Amino acid sequence: MNGYRVQLLARYAELLGAEELAVDLPTPATVSMLTDALRALPGGSALPAQPVLARNLRIAAPGDLIEPGDALALLPPLAGG
Amino acid sequence: MNGYRVQLLARYAELLGAEELAVDLPTPATVSMLTDALRALPGGSALPAQPVLARNLRIAAPGDLIEPGDALALLPPLAGG
Amino acid sequence: MTSLTTDPIDPTALGALVIRPDHGAVTSFTGHVRNHHGGRSVDRLSYTAYPEMAEQECAAIAEEAMTRWDVVVAIRHRLGDLVIGDIAVAVAVGSAHRAEGFATCRFVIEEVKRRVPIWKHEHYADGTSAWVDPTAGTERRESEET
Amino acid sequence: MTSLTTDPIDPTALGALVIRPDHGAVTSFTGHVRNHHGGRSVDRLSYTAYPEMAEQECAAIAEEAMTRWDVVVAIRHRLGDLVIGDIAVAVAVGSAHRAEGFATCRFVIEEVKRRVPIWKHEHYADGTSAWVDPTAGTERRESEET
Image (spheres, chains in turn brown, orange, blue, cyan):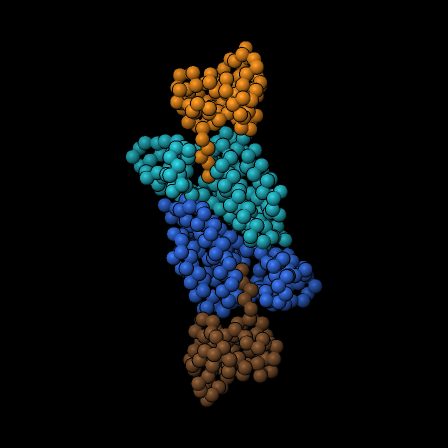
């Protein structure tokens, strides 16, 4: 098991009641393992089935591997501009 | 014969050495009669064969009639913007 | 260059950043806070970002535009509380010719809306508020978005 | 509204004229004095107009645009002496959506260049000067004009 820190942005921070969470996952861990773990948390059921995760400032695919120390952030649908 | 006052703009004022000229023309007079008369003046030979004339703030055709009291202006090729 | 700001955006100052002595054209777009959205009356809103990624995306968009066209690009997006009429986003493009200025400016604002991680929380006249989700209700989005 | 001015043009102020509370987009174009033209080095230039007709044409262009699209249009053209980088012409378009903002802004600047009786007298680095004639030398015009 390894620990991962995830930032939650905008509406997702409200849903999960935190701007950052720590999640433990088996190794090797994928993006979808992390997002599934987040969806299992209180408030997490309102997340989409495959919420968008940024890994090191780039959008990651569900099957991408993540590593402890990665900058991870869960992004609601963008609404800038 | 009637008298017509014509404004000369930009380069055409330089060519003809005046910002406004008075020209006498037989009645009825057309745009091309006026522009031909201007081309016969000193410096006027550098004008194009059919220079653009505005009559009452609208571009006129060579065959259009002009009347004394019309706002007449000879316009070089536009270069705004 | 920093694209995110909590200060009011000044289009004149932004345009001055992209003008070169050999360039004759500056094409700009500013997106302003509107008084309505999705049929509801909006009083004010606040923008929040994932700042590190938003800065990186803005820089990447400008870089892509400047690779594709012979232009200079500046992007600003305001964060925090805004009221009706305030400028939320501004794009300025300096170019030699206006055709490429218009093409670049349109490209950049489309990419900013598509790629930059920024979110909008609207406060309505009836006292309620909501996060804007452009993926919810395609019809509304097409008719409402600037 | 008066389109001709001898004062410096402020894009921020012009944009403020076209923004309505229900509009989210302002698209702008500014044309600036360049340091070269037709292969010659330009120091400064002066613009002169046939003012009554130029005002009428600017008003007519704005009116045509506002008939064709649901937009608010402002046009400014500066007259008199300008130096490199100065704004010679500015168009600002307020709209609900950005597509019509871009379309209108492009239409207006094209029409201003095509129809508004204004002339440009360029002063070159070598001390000479000339009236610009866009009809003389089509190739140079296409490659040089903003």
